[in-house]
Image 1 (cartoon, rainbow, N blue to C red):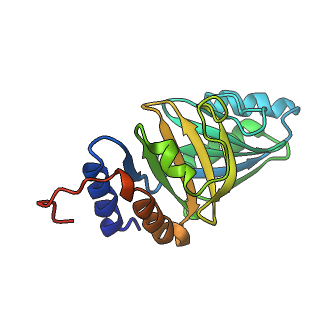
Image 2 (cartoon, rainbow, N blue to C red):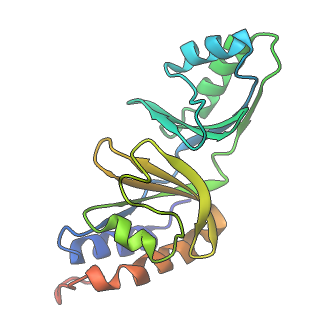
Length: 197
């Protein structure tokens, strides 16, 4: 269950930054872990069923208006979609794969997603991430399994609907990561004395 106190704290930091950063939680995204042989003909059928091509380049991501696919390994992807779509998407993948060996695991309850965007988003994340987040090095449509503030996250650079990052983190670490983001954002905040949060 999404924590309303966490959402309010992130929204208050966003307001206090006066446009420098935007912090939000995107709870309940559908998340499916897919394992299959990308050279198997079934992979093409799965791509057609999903309406996207599973990325084959390491640490790359593909986005459509309905979903995103992240490369996690040579035969593993994480598919992200709108909340509540995991069962129908899983059924579509299994039907498209037919008798081919494919593994589809619903991991939606395992993680939550944070949005970090705005002109200072890269600076904020650089406080706790050792990756080079410069736009030339970590371009849109890139992803990486890494650590942020000693917490394992999957980091996704996005350019739609606006430039920014998604952070996928285990739900049990969401309170810790929220506190770290709020603390790291302090230098970009100019609090409104009338804001109740």
